[in-house]
Image 1 (cartoon, rainbow, N blue to C red):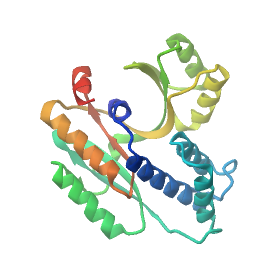
Image 2 (cartoon, one colour):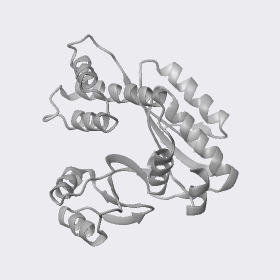
Image 3 (cartoon, helix red, strand yellow):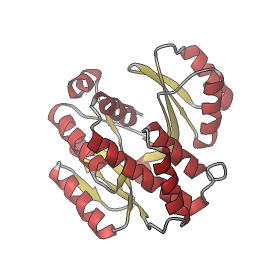
Image 4 (cartoon, rainbow, N blue to C red):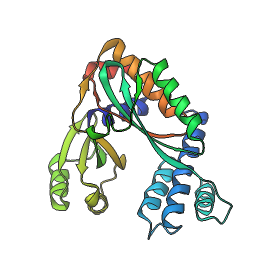
Length: 248
C-alpha cells in the first residue's frame, strides 16, 4: 500500500486552499450524482451512494449541497449525465498509474489527461496496460496516538480483515471490500476513530522512486488530481522515509 499511504501523507502535509476545497466538492458531488442515478436516492439501500455521501461529509461538504446532488442524480432537479472512465499509464521511474474519471465530454477529458501525462514525463497507455496490477481493497487508517496495535489486530482478525501494519504516525488496516463495513463498525464499538476509511485500489507490487524522478512523479499525480474530471488517482510507487520527508 506504499503508493496509497505515501501520497495520502504528502497531501495531508499540504495546505488546503479554498480553490482546492471547491474543486474537491465538485468532484464529490459528481460521485453522488452518479451513485444516486445508478441505485436511487436512499443511502440505506444504495451502498455506493452511502460511501459517496460519507466521503463528501469527510470533506465538510454542506448538507444542502449533498442533498442537491442526490436530487440531480434521481432526476428531481433535472439531469446531469456523466460517463465513468478509466485512464491508465506510466509515470517517471516506470510507476504504474490508474485513474478513474466522471466526465460529460470524453474527447475533452482524454485530451487533457494525455497532455498532463506528457507534460510531466509520463505516457498514457491503452486500456488494460496497468489495471491488472491493482485490486479493490478496503483501507482504514488509524492515528497512532491512543491506538494499540495488538487491539487493532484483534479487531481485524475478528471481522476477517487481512493486515494491520504500522505506517508513519499511524496504522493501516486492509481488508476485502466485503468486510469493510463490519471492520468500521467493530472499530466504532471499540471507540476507535479512523483518520480515513475508504475502498480504494491497491497495487500488488511497488516501484521505488527517488530524487528527481520522485519529484516529477508527485507533480504528475498532483496535476492529474487537479484535473476537473479525474476522481481518483492510484499509483504503485514506494518512497523511502527520507524521501518522504524531503517531499513533504
